[in-house]
Figure 1 (cartoon, rainbow, N blue to C red):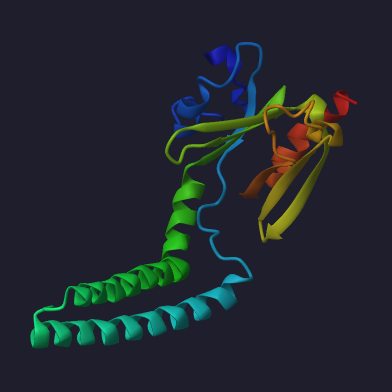
Figure 2: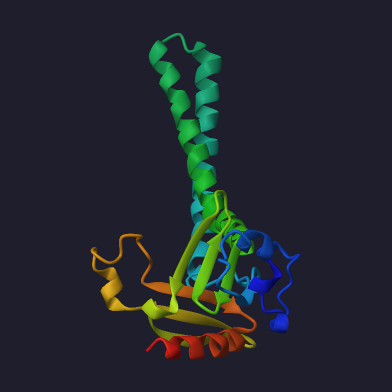
Length: 209
């Protein structure tokens, strides 16, 4: 396997990334760089709006759920649900619980999931293509060769961190060509070494023009 990898840039064959990539990289290509998005980047601008809304939504749902649960308990104590139709009242606390869970996901859960997803996302740059591996559950590998990449951009997203965007050729989105449903953009998000990734990929992209 060592002939597939260029260790000039610190690629360690013992890392988790290598374990995921070893059955993806072909014998004719070598890895120039590999990495992961910064898992600490979980907040976006809209979150400063959604978080207060989520807290308010969760509070309203919790208050409503507590209120209907008290009434259902009172109904049971008074009637022991003598009327079969009274059993339907149990649906209201269940609906309330679902609403509360949705509110908790909106305010907290989605950030936990986003962190988990970022920790299980891996990027690789070889001398032939760009690769993204998602290992949340069943491993999903998406890749694009330089010959179908139209342009590359680097965007500084924060101090000492940035994103590299690979835009694919427009002809790839003709159904006749894009039978594998390749996405329009390949995004290596929130990298501390995004400048390095850009500088490594650009010469290979130009060589395909």
